[in-house]
Length: 243
Image 1 (tube, one colour):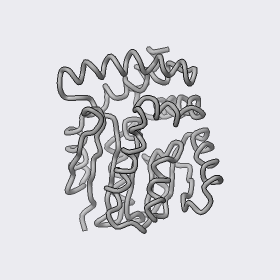
Image 2 (cartoon, rainbow, N blue to C red):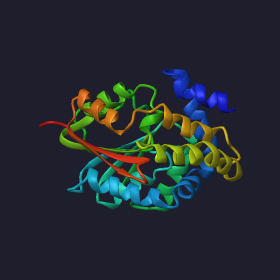
Image 3 (cartoon, rainbow, N blue to C red):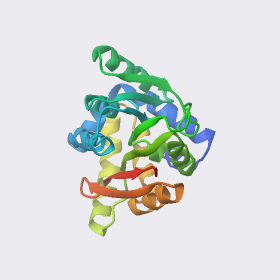
Image 4 (cartoon, rainbow, N blue to C red):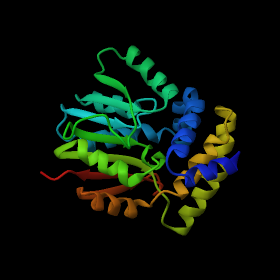
């Protein structure tokens, strides 16, 4: 099963998209619990910080890409934004939809869609967020192009993502934790060690924080910066669209 997960991180296009959708569909019921356990509850703080950085002046229209179970979208809505929460994995959207039902008046609107071909006109959103989603996109450059297209001039993109650690010690800890402990925890909690083998492999194949910053600059974003969290294993990238 781990071999399948490794290949999925190296596959582009529809094959990878289909694999990722099926994999997240399997773990949807335990997704939030696993995130909390894997990060010792820090994922909630990281999402709130991402929402705050994305919307220094709350109250606009926002898009949450790869929304999954919708947690970051609800953090954006809590800041007074109207939020379109988009994903292409139906079981994850079902989890988010139940939260919308439970959180009446949340101003979160669910839309099925692909980050590589956003179903919105240009210059639609004041802010765009993505929480632990960018490394799952089959074409990073295309996702950045689409994100820039639908962002309003002066709008912000905030990307919360796992990132390969820089130092030898951090890399060692990341390897032991992600490649040994996380699949074991995934098997115990979700019954799916293959999905949580994909997670560390996807990080290993994803650009590091500086390379992602450069990709955002190349896509046409300005004022691109990032800050590291979680012992350097998590980063929030912040970028703007020029006016």
